[in-house]
Image (cartoon, rainbow, N blue to C red; front, side, top):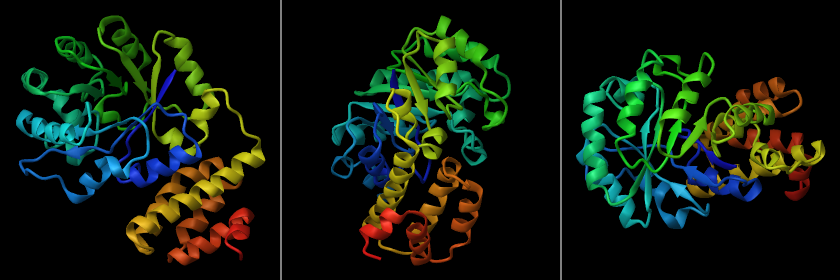
Length: 317
């Protein structure tokens, strides 16, 4: 089974990816948070830093592009080729209203004729392999029958399916029946994405679709960073698991401080991380509240030393 780390905007950038890979790993492919293709001929500094090969120590990274205009997509793909990438991923899955209102992400799925023309041009002109991350449609899962027919016309390197429609956001349950239709009808490699938060969740999907050998996980890995290891049969004792979480969170904080300087932006990022990570800790609700109440980075660091003795010992406190 190949496991992929799903991109989460503002969270899974290069600083985070590098630390995660060092402390956990078990991931075959990482994907960047989406690069928004515009009519500008330059990437934003933040986006460029995230894709620079010298900033990334993970073995296999796929840049993800958000666009509904072929010329803009091709421009960014060309920039990725110049950096040495051989594959890019097209984001047709983001359900955010700010994205959908511009006809991008899963909003593009509402325009199948325009989508078909777009795919025809980028697959004809792009020198790189193109994979696609998609939802089932905008309003109705039945929309995916037409969308599948469109995808099947092109040499899609890989189709990553989050089996919800746009209006679901992350509510309701993934539509496994429609994912099963994709397994029967699609002629490209498929990857399943959606609500894999435990080994049991993974086993359920694997039992339903044993022919699918690729699974993408996002929020599940943020909350339980050891999940990929457990899926691959590597177990940690509870003591080891908690100790590693402390070391990992501390390393993420140190890496952010090194990259951006110590200050409030780092605190905000650590609060965002613990919004997920607290779920895997004893008394996680209390811990989440404590982290949320911290107002300064040094206060956050003191709290971590109180919770994880090994950090206190390492830092000589």
